[in-house]
Length: 248
Image 1 (tube, helix red, strand yellow):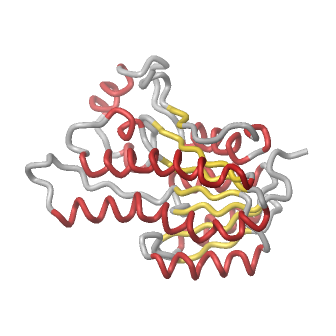
Image 2: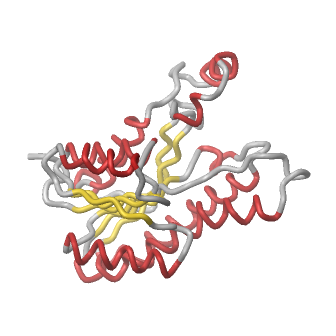
């Protein structure tokens, strides 16, 4: 029996990177996957085909997760198409890193809106369906910098710390209806974004990590499988650091 057999998940920001790894890992465990990204482009189409090849239902949607009405509309479409929503992964996120003295209001607003407001938008939109089902797992993608902060990332750290507070509040609000809410705080994960770093910078990062390696998108995806499955049926309101021991 696959761990997510018969379940349906929404994964935001899943055309590539960590979101794509989560969608594919869910599909491997028998989960039907609806995923969103800013555009339904070639990358999204390729992801959709890869998920479908695993024998589950898959559909990609163009959606700006930061827009409230657009989010409600896309969730309504997904519920109509798939009939249920068992797992929501709020993964959509951006960075606009710079020191606070140089940070513009637009750089602050953009990161807070995409990273934090998008989780509000999608959680609010799926809440009705999960309440009817009296079950559901909400997984919010935070970060180790949301737990410990980081120079040059005041906007990103604030958005990811906000997600932790949001996660814990939703766990308390919806727990009595069988809906769980947890956050994952990835550390240094090797993606296209971090792949652009020089070898020296990457090695400096890895030297700070007790396991002496960067994480993979699959490391994060595996934790999502645990939180989305019935294996974690008594886990709610928690933050799980997937960071190789960086944050202890």
